[in-house]
Picture (cartoon, rainbow, N blue to C red):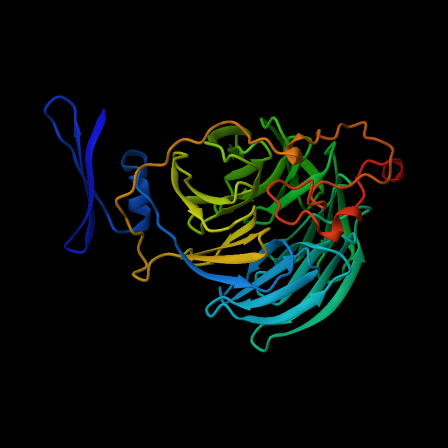
Length: 424
């Protein structure tokens, strides 16, 4: 089939696609409904684009923006950075509201409770911290600090009911905490290498974890037991997300691939055309029809979950995209980057996807670009006994695409798996 011509037209308030495809002497006219759901259902044949436009660029952090979270009302953005600060931003104006906290080490992850009244963070000093928030008055109070792990805390997540805090670490463990009291409920063990990413299911019953052992594990939260192990990645899994209906998990790897998993069968149902570098962050749109991925290739890609088609590539960051999140209404996408900025991407003001005269996404090369950081051998189960090796992700030489190779934090972290940790 050869596409000779394709045009987008607005006709009587609806969106129509006219593209002439000649098969012998026949032509095809396809019409797309303006509703986002109907529109996305047509993407498999129309190769259209759900168009986010660049909005504001937020500047203030002095180093990598490692993590972002958005308040339930969509008004406040929270960011954590290697500059050791947590900052609050007005998402409508782009103004920095306050510097919430100056940590002793880099802030790797932040999470906000469903009611917007509690914030949790995990950092390179091996602790988790919990704050009480009053976002209306821009007030906060540090409620507790816990020495959580024997190595840095890479990720934290709060359950949908706001009762459980989960933390993950390169010490190969995940810990579940009572968010109100700070008491430890369970220690989840089983991964054979660094645990890099975690996510709660929408009903809060399950927790997914991604690890440098190339696997995803699904855990039963109330029992603290392993429920499933998903295998299929050939490289470390460093990003993970549950679909809003809880039926699927998306996982991103250092080989640039993204996989979608059916949790009922435990099988991979789709492997998305890869980024050209590490997939560092994943986020589903609130309706579950779009998957966004942030990568060390400095781009964000949007994917049609139903068929795995690439919808669009967002370019604007000058270094790796470390964290992404949708607002609750799905009309804004926010990204944090190693270029020290936060980008706000918005749908057009008419609140409908804008279809434009754009060519379909070209397939990505399967090759990973040469980069010394990507050549670091993956840690084996029998890890070196040296206690002075650096943890991947804490050193700028270790992270691909970094523009900050001279960051002082790089020499401070230890590699999990040392003889000290193995004895714990």
